[in-house]
Amino acid sequence: MELFKLPPRWLFIKITTEDGIEGWGEPEVEGRADTVKAAVEEMAEYLIGKDSRRIEDIWQLLYRGGFYRGGPVLMSAISGIDQALWDIKGKSLGVPVYELLGGAVRERMQVYSWVGGDKVVNVVEDAKRRLSQGFRAIKMNASANLPWIADSPSKTMDIVNRIESVRDAIGPEVGLGIDFHGRIHKGIAKVLIRELEPLKPMFIEEPVLPENRDVFSALSQYTTIPIATGERCYSRWDFKSFFEQGSIDIIQPDLSHAGGISEVKRIAGMAESYDMALAPHCPLGPISLAAALQVDFCCLNAFIQEISIGIHYNERVDLLDYLKNPEVFDIEEGYIRRPVLPGLGIEIDEDKIRDMARKAENWRNPIWRNEDGSIAEW
Image (cartoon, rainbow, N blue to C red; front, side):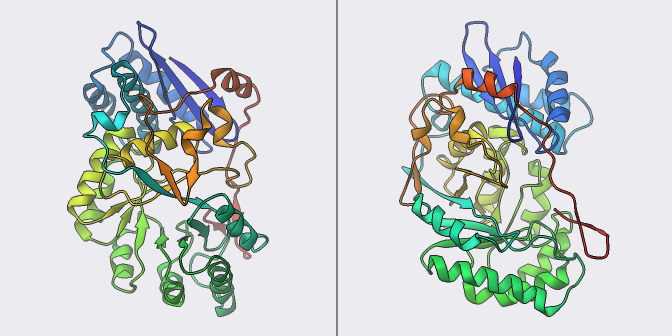
């Protein structure tokens, strides 16, 4: 097993079997790569000498064997290992992973990409650029450091006006997701949601922090806009109360945080039984995206996939840079074609990875403060 810390904020794992089959995974918590790396290394003793085909047994061992479980670090470590084991199994049998999970239910998958929004500068131009790249759906942040509790009407209207300018630029046929990043209080959320309804967003993401689950129930009764959340939920148990409440419409588990392919497939099945759509979160690297697509292509309730082609949060390394076959992520009329290569369907450029690993830095998300000096949600 080898681990590679890579720019801009990624961590890759390579697991090699005794007969030489290599599997790749992406275990990471953005800004905490060294912490997750340590967790993966601690789990390695449970892997050495095990049968790589027994993916479910290994998953349960890693999840339950340490007594303490769940959370972003431990589940992200399991996620990367799980991805790599599925990659190995698919390669050993000569089929894509989705074939081992029931087979494909679609021939192409709709995708969207992030265009900014924290700052006013260039957000309209960035949206138009994404359309020129083949996207037919985009997502923007609603605002940067809007105070959590309350603010002036002028500031909330600035947010609405900025989002409206993007909608005017892209037209009514393009999907527009709006991400609040859990940065605001339910009082402001109610105001903004009501003002944004005429713009017909594709969804509103994390209107409040996911730990405020009861608030989601209140907001869902307040608007007709679909509500999405899930990037900070790490297992089916974290999603359970959302399912039972019926308070969200779209779940967004991250394949590098929520237990990998094995767990997200289970979460997706649970969501389908509650009439909820699947839209995996993925502002990450090529392995995480490849794993997400394997789930998308075998889950009927998957409706759109996040993808970070190009720059995300001003980071200058493209996920395509690490692949020998970047064409697998080609976008045509807003869709990615069904992958056909075995395993995760990607060919990793290991020479590039080893070279870039020497240039990795300790990425951290910015720390924001409100005008009064209090800490703000990033």
